Amino acid sequence: MNIGAHVRGGGTLIPSLKAGEEIGATSIQIFTQSPRTWKPSVYAPEVLDAFYEAQVAHPSVRHTFCHATYLINLGTPNPELLEKSQATLTHNLSVGRRMGAAGVVVHTGSHMGTGFEVALPQIATAYLRALDEADPAPAGVPECPLLIENTAGAGGTVGRSFEEIGAIIDACGRDERLKVCVDTQHLWASGFDFSTPEGADALVQSIDSSVGLERLTCFHLNDSLVDRGSNKDRHANIDEGTIGLEGLAALMGHPAMRDLPMILEVPGEKDGPRASDVADAERAWRRGVEIYAARATKN
Ligand SMILES: [Zn+2]
Ligand SMILES: [Zn+2]
Image 1 (cartoon, helix red, strand yellow):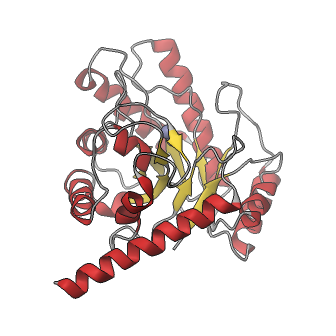
Image 2: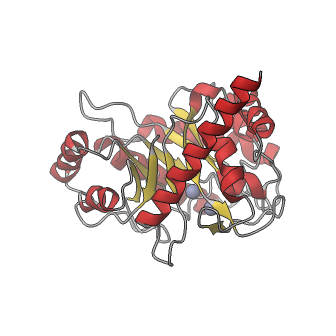
C-alpha cells in the first residue's frame, strides 16, 4: 500500500516531505511553481540537490511527484499560448528531473473545438520537445517521466479516454519517457465504471490495450462530488462522494493496481488531505484487497 497526498511545496520544497509524513502519506505530490501563473520558480541547483538527498533518505515518504502548471495547453490553436505552454512544460520537467521526482503529471489541455485529430500532431511535438529540451537529471538520479493525466471529459479537453492518451503516445513514437497518471474522479466523471471487480478488470484491460499497463505509474485518488458521466472535475473526500469507499476499493485492491502510489487530491476541510483522509484511503485499500481475496477463493 502506498497512499500519497498533494501537499504544499514551500520555498526549498523540503517542508513538503515533512507535510506528507505528518499526515501518514508515503508519497507526496507538489507544485514546483504557482499552478495558476506563468511565472517560473527558479531554484538554485543546490536546493534541488538537497531535496533529492532528503527524499532518498526519508524514512517514510517513498516518492515525490510534481504537478505541472494548470495553465499549460498543448492543444491550443493559439500559437502564442502554445509557445508559453511549451516553455512552461519544459521548465517544469527540468525542475522535476533535477530534484529526482518520480514524475511530472500533466493536463494536456484542450483543442478548443478544433478536434482531437487536428491538435494531435502539435501535442506530440510539444511532449517530445519537453522531453528532449529539459535539463537532464544529474548523474545517478533516475529518469523523471512525464505523466499524462486523464481528464473528466469536459468540452474539448484532450485525454478523456485511454484511446486518446494511447494515440498521443503513438504519435510520440511510444517514447518510454511518457507515462500515465489516472485520476479516479476524472475517470468516473468521464463515464468509466470501475466500481466493481469486473469494472476494475475492464479498466486494466483498457489501459493495457491502448497505453500499455507498464506505463501506469500512479493514481490521483479522489471520490467524486458529481455523478458518473457528468464530465465535471469535482473532487470529494473518500467515501463522501458518488463513487464511495466500496467503489474505490474495487480499483485500489485490484492486483494489477494495488501497489502503485495513490495520491489524494481531496478537499479535506478546504485545506487539502488530512491524516483522517489518508486513514480513510488505507481503509478503502484494505477493503479492496479483501474483495479480491474473496473472489480468488470463489473461483
Ligand atoms: Zn491533475
Ligand atoms: Zn481533478
